[in-house]
Length: 255
Image (cartoon, rainbow, N blue to C red; front, side, top):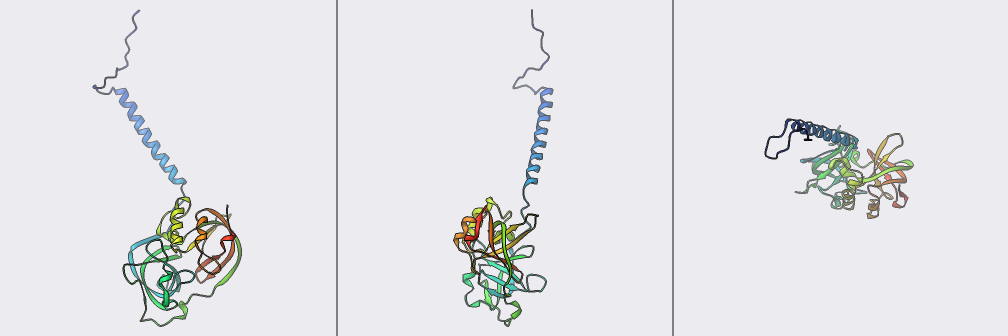
């Protein structure tokens, strides 16, 4: 008995695609496009916010104030907003500190040429190394109100969080924390960028503190703990608008 002829179109490579196949591939393409877009949006929504820091290296200007080298390079200035004395950390354009270049200008009225890195009230100046970025301010007399304030002890703490480099967190790079940023943060801290501790509280509160060890800059022994979840025991100190966490490496425990 002969088999009945089928009405299904027969595929021929050089012929036009049958209408049924065109409809199938069109629906499949649209479905894959919509599904991929939805998956991408979902994955993006699950990511942590990269932070609100900003830095435009091309916006170079002069900043006047009093400079200090210890424990890290800093400028105390009224040019940072509001006309009141505020503190800005100093760094080079790359992954290095500039404390060794301050020398005899410690505590003197100076002019710093650089660009502003800012995240909220946290500020850093990336100095313009294309020329003499630091010079004595011949127009200004020593101003006691621009001296670094005395250190105020706020108490002993035990905090959980992450050690990171202040420059990237302030706005030089986004995102600026976590495992993906470990290599960059380690290079910055090794080069002299002030390390910072980002503490996270159990109810969502957070704080950033510049890290010191006995009032001095931390050494390379801190690098092994950068970008890992850690718990730290130490003293919280306030120096004007700068919040610091003073602790030895021996008081830091990886979680």
